[in-house]
Amino acid sequence: MKTLGQLISKYRETYNLSLREFAKLCDVSHSYIDKLEKGVDPYSKKKVEPTLDTIEKIAQAMNMSLEHILYKIGKIDTHKKERFEKAESLKDELKEMIIRRGIVNNEDEIDAKLLDLIEHSIKTYAKNTDNVKKEDN
Figure 1 (cartoon, rainbow, N blue to C red):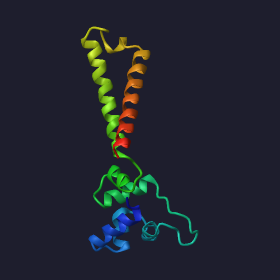
Figure 2 (cartoon, rainbow, N blue to C red; figure 1 turned 60 degrees about the vertical axis):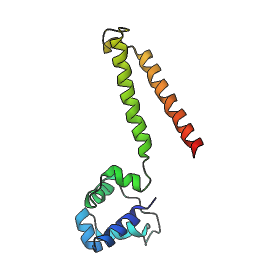
Figure 3 (cartoon, rainbow, N blue to C red; figure 1 turned 30 degrees about the vertical axis):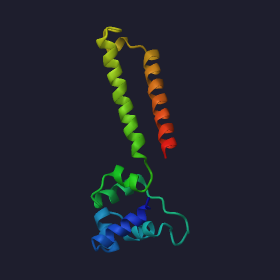
Figure 4 (cartoon, rainbow, N blue to C red; figure 1 turned 45 degrees about the vertical axis):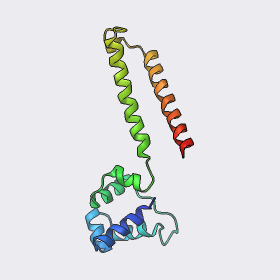
């Protein structure tokens, strides 16, 4: 896993861009890009924490999606996102199956308790899947 500063530095090196050239692509000051690459503000000695908007500008300048750059710097786990999307899909499929089997006539008749049960089952499945993956590693 790399830092945002390392990604920027590597990108600039690969494309032979100066700080000013890269900063112009991002619409961010060159001094801020320099701080990001160093990881700390030289005056305050504090870690530089860019806003999501700034990260998005940098991602666009590097022709990357925001999600991809956040993944590369360790801010999101794409596997969790994928499991969440699968869980939502499974929830929708279960609703349709309940309606098809005639348990209810339409989605409006699926009460909150049944939806809670479905969501609880999906979360339990996701946790168990996580535990199995950890044991495999």
